[in-house]
Length: 328
Image (cartoon, rainbow, N blue to C red; front, top):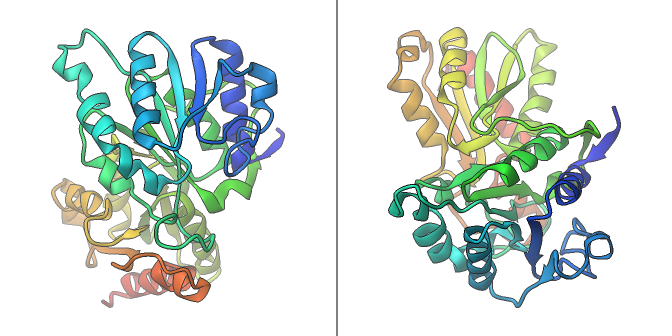
């Protein structure tokens, strides 16, 4: 099986789906000749032309509104928001229009569109270009929020997202773009709303998303040498959230830690924890349920402060050791 980077896996999914379905087209700022801010759409203008790789003004509201209109007329738009932070400029279109149309029109119409949005810290891009806003988007019924952590998941979930009849927020972590993994060349999809156990374990369940999955696995491999076996669960889709896989895991391990880069207050960890403590798994919990999120501050520009603002491997290890050791 060939190895692709996370970025190449998403590009391959877009390329293959545009070849397969003429209704699929791309729109966004600088995605044509420039190839996008991160180079993900490089070469696609030459292959598919200006009708299907459409440059837009610097207006996120316009980008999302155009995608909504196109989807209502039978197209399958994939819009790019250059940085996830800028989706805030298009929340009216996403939340009050795209997310509600199927419901408000009694199911007579749908909005099959994907909005790609690179997010997360680690690139030194400072406070307005480094946020993780997945929890904000999770609050709105009618949206789907996808957050892959591996190249394999990125391709399979992108294909599922484009083919889904609902508006999808496809969140890509910028630092994952260069990470590599095995990705089939063939067409394949991953079901939306199904979590995956990335690493089985018996002593504690750690639920993490995007880059925190990678960091947690690194910690788990280290602790395994000491006999501590960490089960790592990647939700992959945050809305809808696969609580069953998480609850079943906690019932087996008796411990739960949720890790995300987003600010801890109001983060999606709270939703996971509420689902677990309100389930039969609560009877099997042997230690306090904990969450580890980003600091409740804007992301600093200084690289050292930037790292201090979000969970790192040392903090994840510390939390796991405390819970497995029965300490708070």
